[in-house]
Length: 229
Image (cartoon, rainbow, N blue to C red; front, side, top):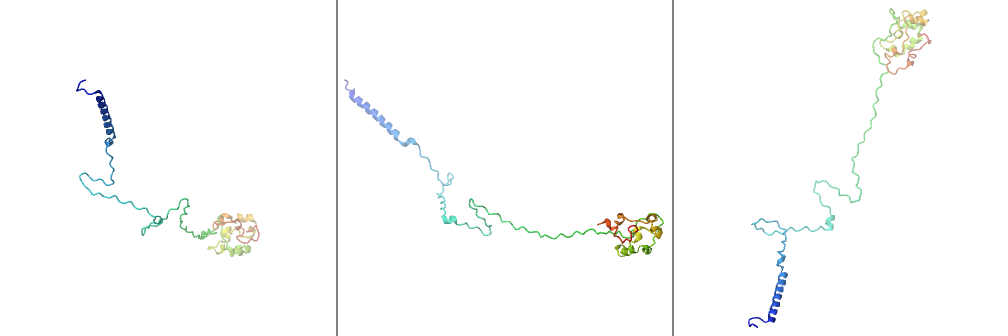
């Protein structure tokens, strides 16, 4: 064996020691925390400061302390002059109805009576029936009353006699110059032919325009007989 060549046992031991050293180095390298990288920076609550300026550290404002139960139950004061507010009703409670202003009661006034139309609308001036034929003249109330005394007396007490000019016998029955004689008046047909007129509702309504009644013709004056006016 060459004197410079190592012994086989020494060479094997060196090989084993070399491999163990390499394994140990690998374990140490894996156990080092350098591969984890730098730790993340924690954000500061302070306000950012522009680059190049230095500012003192300002502490964050302290958070308000929680209110005590007595302070929570105490109502907050309202400013003077401000309208008072109604606290909200608890859940489930029925809200009170809104206050309504009293409605003014209308005072009932009695209705004023409506004036009725007058029963008589006198046109004024002379009122007379139309003459049935020409040439007739008036004889006057005194001559009519010789035979028709009862009618004349009842007429004299009526409003017809008090009218101006009066609504007399010949105003309603026509001028009596031809039928005034007793011989003609006893015959109703001869009297009508001589100018006697028996007025109807049309003539009476010249004045009696309202509240007309047919029986007013029979009540205009008293009658002696039903056939002779």
